[in-house]
Length: 235
Image (cartoon, rainbow, N blue to C red):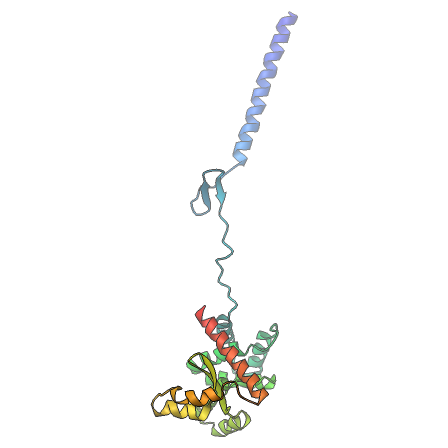
């Protein structure tokens, strides 16, 4: 009788163990769900399916002067004609810059000029003057053309007196950095596009021979800015 009871209790324990182990096992299977969508899972031969995360290097954020100038143009065009709003937008745009982004503003002014946003060009240039930034020759010529197109000849004359064109310019002739007179260079382009060939002998004698250190520093800055623009457009 005792042996029968022991045998019955052992069978009962085995049945209970099988019952509870089945529920635990099925519960674990239900808790583990693997997505089989091809857009979110990549099947690996070693470790099975794994989630696909967005690639960090495929980003649309860029920090070049071209994208910065485009952002500046979009920001300015969305404002009203109140000059304080334009000044505030430009001030906030350059707030985190170590120095005034002259190349970026120059490209933004060129874009505004191509889109015939004459008033915006004048507003940005006026804000540059309030900040005490000296524009380069290309920006002065651009704003002067805007004044002429709008018939503001008095402002054009004031601009020409305040920022007179330089007497000399540095150009590259046969791989050499040569100093050329701006007046003679403009005459050569107007006569028939002779270019710089007529000034090679004169420019070779003046190669880096300027005694005016201020002009040399200014020309070096303009040459550096032009090189940065070419590198940016190449990329």
